[in-house]
Length: 106
Length: 123
Image 1 (cartoon, rainbow over the protein chains, first blue to last red):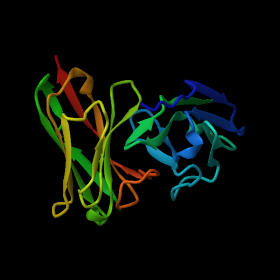
Image 2 (cartoon, chains in turn red, yellow):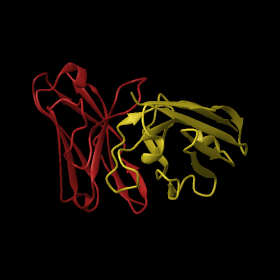
Image 3 (tube, rainbow over the protein chains, first blue to last red):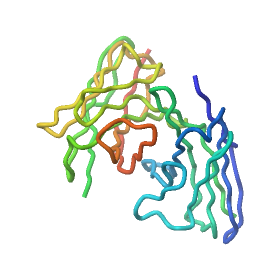
């Protein structure tokens, strides 16, 4: 089965740029989505189809996907962006999530 | 406003069955594919199943294939997940989510999510 690998944690200072990676075999050939989840809350879609932002998601969230790696970039990171982030792709009639990355803003 | 309300969860013994429901409002239910995602306590997200807007196409994760059945009643704006032969590893918070397209695609946009319903399977 297809696997997605994310770093367990990423730290960033407020106002700086955070990058969260997601790796998988030929990931660039698939569409990647990214979800933000805060404790006790439902996931929130922040990026879909590699680069698209749903309505209401701040412009500081952006995505890219090429080769074997998809990346979620948060520019001008704010304290409120601290959360767990999951990447997700569709592969052979099933969806797959990465293990999640804890983003700490400090 | 899109609203998704899950129900039907609870405590069940291993080998038992439960049927989860997801009541939808605020949009034309039959025009959108729907999916279930679960999250075991303290763990990450795991996709469970998806169904097209018409109900004609369904897909399942290998971990639930043959045990879970996803269906929908578009006249009642409700999604159902029938879970049989439950195992302790099925213990999780189950979320239903709405896609932005009618058909199941390789680039889903699960924008709207319910609050989740807890399923606990005891051994």
